[in-house]
Length: 377
Ligand SMILES: C[S@@+](CC[C@H](N)C(=O)[O-])C[C@H]1O[C@@H](n2cnc3c(N)ncnc32)[C@H](O)[C@@H]1O
Ligand SMILES: [Mg+2]
Image 1 (cartoon, protein in one colour):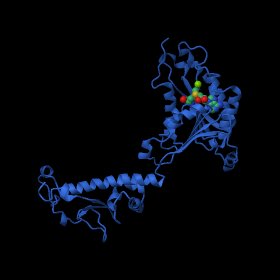
Image 2 (tube, rainbow, N blue to C red):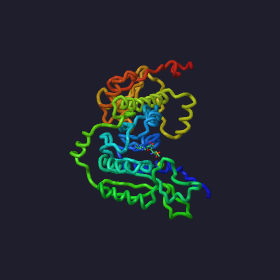
Image 3 (cartoon, rainbow, N blue to C red):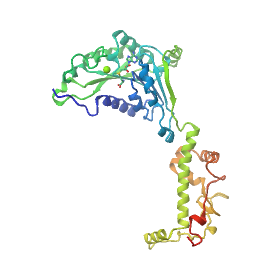
Image 4 (cartoon, rainbow, N blue to C red):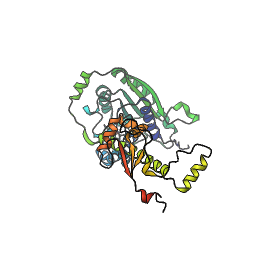
């Protein structure tokens, strides 16, 4: 029998299933039970909707080894997300009740249940559906009917599996739970069988449980009072635009590079290099060329005064280029980040790396050396 090759790999298809669910339903609080080497968590941390991401596993060594991989990368500091993301890892058992896992929108259990002994499975289902009671649960487990297609397989797919269920067995288990804990359940899967063996079903079967009720504040309050028994292995808050420090960095990066480009454009227009001047003249032949400003910089005045003392065009005064803040606020990204003009003004004026007066960002220009204003260059 030919070995079956899944593309993408089967485990990736399971993760893709979860990520597609997250993309579609945008849960904010997500936990992965039996998170193992944290591979799924590493993918989920890029989902912008998630604000709290938690992993739980009974294997402490694995969590300790992998926790570094969940810390923010340099890019997270350079491009902070809009929402604040907290990532935590806990060492503990899915059979134990701990308030750290209540109030979640989504809890995933990917290839976990078949690793639990029957008495632990009973405790687990009460902990998950009765205590944690998230809005949605995704459970994946092997479909034993698919095993006939796996060459050389004797027994279970993994040495640590305590059972492998047919579709009927899994669906009976899931339907009973749904009834008992007031959830609805639907079934799906990943790992398509080959065309000539469609009747065996997916290689991994998946149950999607959705809670039918809204949990009361009173019930949540009661659960919050349970003793904490999981051991925290990691708790890290990602940089985000919710933090003033990172918001200011992002605003400055956008606003100052925009201001810098305007400065360059203004100087290019005031002091065109010979070849550029010719190019510009050729390209706009037959059109009005009066904007090609004279290089007599000392007499260059701002074009349109807005209110008294405020100018809405960049201008050169002496050897300083003024880029009025109103112009910076016209940049859509700057506007989106700041929300209002006063925030932009405050962020720019508070930062020591930017020279500004009340109304403008200022750039000093070395006119003699950088531009041919004397005709000697
Ligand atoms: C097959 S691995 C699943 C890995 C991961 N979910 C994935 O899809 O890549 C099963 C994981 O469940 C964990 N596990 C087993 N029993 C557990 C328990 N009682 N509580 C928490 N985790 C448990 C194991 O340590 C292991 O990391
Ligand atoms: Mg397994």
